[in-house]
Length: 516
Image (cartoon, rainbow, N blue to C red):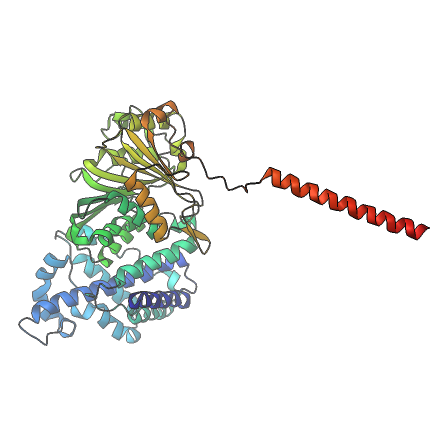
């Protein structure tokens, strides 16, 4: 209970801070400043704690934040090799915050510090992980104010508000405070940003369901991968479900949007995933995949963009790409959904599991998509299809689905689960609660028929149905109409007619008496 109260208090403070400080800055833009400064505070505390712990073994009263920048230089290479970055004592969040009100050039001070932090990793193994991390935190933007004085006043307020957040010690993982704050902020801004800002953000409970599906029967995995990783929420669910040390080699993902790519890397750090345990790449996964040297992966989760355009057969080389060629056809140029599916299948290990959120059209559309479904079913790669409730995702009200892929199935059947009614209302959205998630997981693990909810279907039946994978084609919906007893209804009608007749006779008698 104390943990939940602490989390609730943290959320309340963040909400108040956002309301008080955003002013003229649009909510979705404003999150760049909140998350960027939250990240700055985190890495400052993280480095300070790391260096203090080591030096205090020989110098009990050592405090890194209090020594001079010149004295600290001796620790630079050690810090960069261990943590991936270095921050001078004078440039730590806590020290900058103390001086902020009296710094007439605060915007330039912060810009220099952010350049120095990124620069500390140049030439090191962590260079790619830190390059451009602060580029969306523009401390000279007119969004903060028309003049330097106005911008600095806003920056002071932001620094002080971030400093006042009760995050606990970095070593206190009871509520995973920094990571939880990130997730809450993303959820808050995505829910208010609509399709323009929130479409890439996968709700936490959906992320949890995907991660639990691909880790059924496992206590650890080798590597996890998301080819359209967004802000990284799906990947990081493995850290919470299995424990980050039980993702042995690390977290791998690729993202095409540079702002979201930066958010994902920040998210990794805020969940205390060290630079050498993640590899997030920037670029188009379908045309330029960046993790070919790391595949295959034991666990893949993804919520790719729905029905986006891609090169398709405009690029003659793609039909020979080993990721797409096995199906003998490319996904349509206007709908890349199954191109992502084929990419994921190609990079899945023989013992692995992939869970993909899909646009419902991929289940039943004809043409090239039907041919790709035929390839998937005929080769027994589809393990399960789950129909999700509508209105789960930000900016998308349609009911999406999950396709689960495996390469080493023991039966030539596909499980269908109709979870369209498994939700609770939360504000203006629907969400999966713990009971909903457990019911879906239990059905997935048991693979037993349950009327109106799940059915294990022979692949031969799916072939006879033209490879249609719509859940409604295999599971009969529960009839919610009221059951009516016709005999009882007729008896009630007869009784009503009898009473009407008696009442009419009484009225006729009264009228005749009055006329007489």
